[in-house]
Image 1 (cartoon, helix red, strand yellow):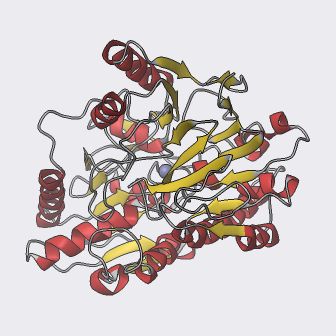
Image 2: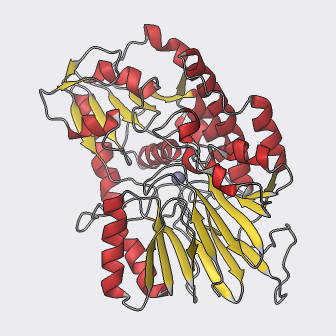
Length: 460
Ligand SMILES: [Zn+2]
């Protein structure tokens, strides 16, 4: 009999609304419950219908990005007595993210999306009151009991630092004499602010691993330090031409990594004082990073980003009269320049001006406005939103390698070293999953490899 049964509740093989049902030792545990980044309304939910009416014993949230958190209130409404475990940092970030989601859904409702809101501010408040924070490395049971060293229990759960964003964890579950690791979103190397993941190196039977960057090789000789220098130099080049720089960023994670980079280079005297603008959501999330600056695992302990870098906050209400001034950095969400976001609306003013730069610092879906802009050539006509005028691309467009997800090479190295009996690939597009599967098949011929198809239980 298998120790674990896993059902992928994400709708397809993709980076979608991440959600997994893990059954082990008579317990049913949900790992993450996200909202799809590209879909709207009820289509953005994971396949919660497959949970039917059977009770759940525990819900685990690995981190506060929307594609892991966004549908949590809908799930929690159906299971009002199931405990939800996460870290203290994720609790604080999730509170802000969920209320922001309600605001976004209310605006989409006004624009005609009749499914919205999928949950209300009241639901979000009830959710965060039910969240139960657990410290890193503390073993606990699905019922929330602390497991003492040496104590034997049916199911022991443990959070390990995943190095992806503030509060992010991988989850180690020990049951039926086996060890199961869900990586969540993971990064093995240090970023500018976050420290690299601290995953177990001992025997692991099954690894459920994300595949985000599986189709993208890391450039030979890549070094984060050199990439940071290339980035800072490119910004200064744009300033020297009398332009400004737009950096489309995720409000959570990438904004704070960017602010840390600016802090580092200013402290070394390598970057001038200049006005930096971030969005309102980014400011709220940066406040949480600052509040936890001495109590969370990260680099630069104690560094207060809002005080040190002193960015200005732009709100959506100011956009109508917004005029770009030279020598400024606009680090605005969303990272993929999704329609109706700050980076999308302001991006239109940057595109036709050769003095300006639009610099990307993370993943963008090829179909997103950011993905289309990244693929365009100088002189191409670009339309960032259905309602906007086409603009001719004349500004400088650059892509920098600051992903918060580990490189595929680092994943291969970790998996090769740990040599699990079974590996399940999720959270990646098909080419990414295929590359990782082919590579691991040749390196670990004894290991069983799975691609978790939507809704089909895997006995592991
Ligand atoms: Zn994430």
